[in-house]
Amino acid sequence: MPVGRRASCPREVRGVSPDTAASRERNEQTVGSAWLTLPAEHRALLQTVGADQWRIVNEPLGTVASELLRSAGSHTLSKAEQASLNDAVGVWVPSLRAVLINEAHQAIAGLDTSSREAFLARIAWHEWGHALSVARCSPDDIADGARLLDLAPAGISASIRTANYRRSQYTHELIAEIYALLMARRLRGVYGQPPWLHSELQQLIVRTTNLSD
Ligand SMILES: [Zn+2]
Image (tube, rainbow, N blue to C red; front, side, top):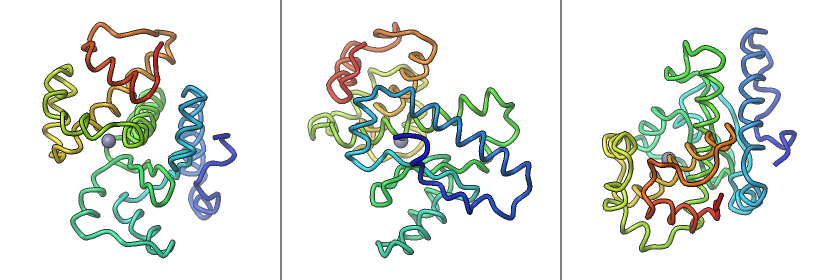
């Protein structure tokens, strides 16, 4: 998606301090650059599945998503769903056709510029990887999540297990995390299968995202 088609509304920055507006603009540019890092084929697929727009906000995502869904005349989120999303830095909401990112999240506060850019890009790549996974995974891939998690590097599998995802989310989270790391590598000009990636997971990524280089 061209950066000009981003979902966030310019009105959101009115009435806030110039510093906040400048920070929002930098964050928009970071996510826009991360989008352009994706292979064109992926951007086209993400457009098809409704994950090609994003909205950067400065409130907890459960609250924001619930309000956006309500104003779109869609279902609202339960209190429990809102509470769990309120902890997230990013989320893809298919019925809004948008990725939401909370730039005021405590995980971002205090990061220097380059760390914040790297972190925001990783969040965006994760959410886009998530959307590709949902679009392309087979029921067998999803059912195989716990075993696939065992094949992942310990840091990735531990972060997914301790985040209390349902087992049916394991494969999507795994693909999203690996996808984000592969995109970061590509940005550095490094392609091919990383030494830390099990061949079976590499094949899963290739099959679900067509990322073959
Ligand atoms: Zn995820």
